[in-house]
Image 1 (spheres, helix red, strand yellow):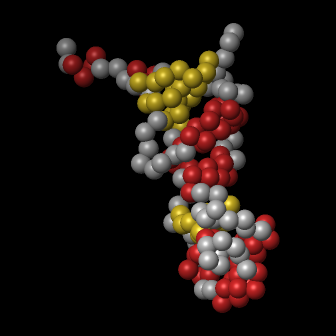
Image 2: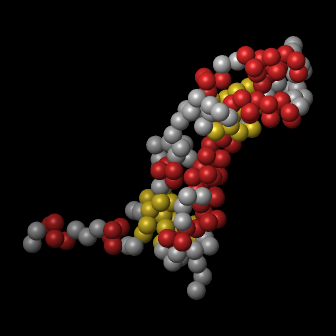
Image 3: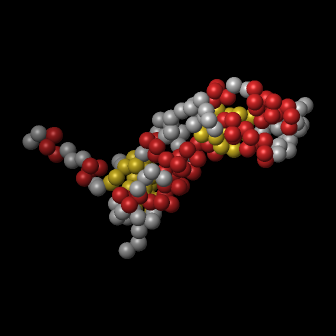
Length: 171
């Protein structure tokens, strides 16, 4: 008897559907814009100086980039300053968000997750792939799980050959 005849791919026969969140990664460079560089003596934002800077700065440097806007200094920055900055970044940047790079990545994944029709996983056994070439934020795993548990028969984490059960519908 040929050994090849006895090999059975149980993973292929299991009916598991693998969902790889890394395929939802939004390409493009991620950068931080720190408003601390616009503060007078690192303490306050002077409106006249800021408006002049906003008008004369070359915002094309942010073309097609995903921009996270922060202020790392312990300073009170008025809301209008962030709004004004957004109006100048928006024509160039692919994304503009207030927050750090982690928040930016979570937002990008949230947008990508809206493109998934979870109904295609109705009554299915779904494995959410655990290893990826890109950093997938925990937010994306949690958000996907909350969507899948509404329709899937079961949700697992890992690889089809080695999964950790996360959810199994009762009954």
